[in-house]
Image (cartoon, rainbow, N blue to C red; front, side, top):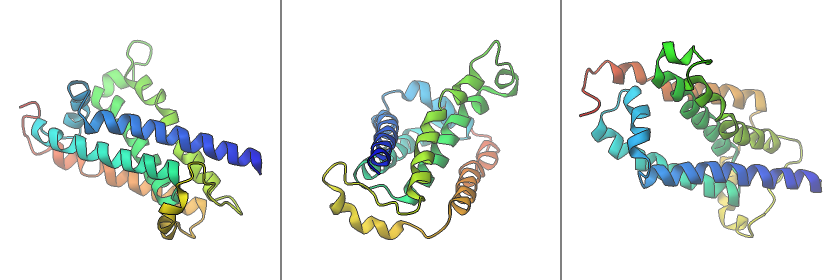
Amino acid sequence: MASLLNVEAILRIGACGCFIGHGWIAAMKLEFSGWKKFLFSAGFSEAEAHVLMPIIGWMDVLLALATLIRPVELFSAWMTAWAFSTALVRPFSAGAARAFAPMSDNALWGFVERAANWACPLALLCLQKADGYEAADITGLGSYLAPLDALNTDKDLATLFKYICIMICVVWAPVPLLRARGKNKSA
């Protein structure tokens, strides 16, 4: 069991690092000029991007800290869906011509290189669903977030995978409507 605890700690630290790093950058809008194109491609205006980016960033930071302190299955599922979606926006924002030209463009590789961003919380979720799993208190703060255990589910891993697919669809469902608004996204 000690080796599983080490794997759990690595996965929690990895998920936390990914989400706290990206979250802080988004919350503080440190890379706004580079990241706004992804929100534009989803149909948001620049003004909306200025509002959404910090909200998304702070949500990522909170999920990162909760996962480090005491992981919750539904948080891990959401982190998987969100990280997959933010990786997928790279080739999507570049357009089909660039996304399907991997030998001459990096649009597809932007998705590929972010596989660990969603695979890490997915692996943590798989561990969380293992028989006898109990979150290790790797920070000494886990008892403070013990009430979050109520958010853990009795659903099996296959059902949670379906939920992840639904979450990805929910994230992407408004995109055609947002894009159809016809706003000037860079204004």
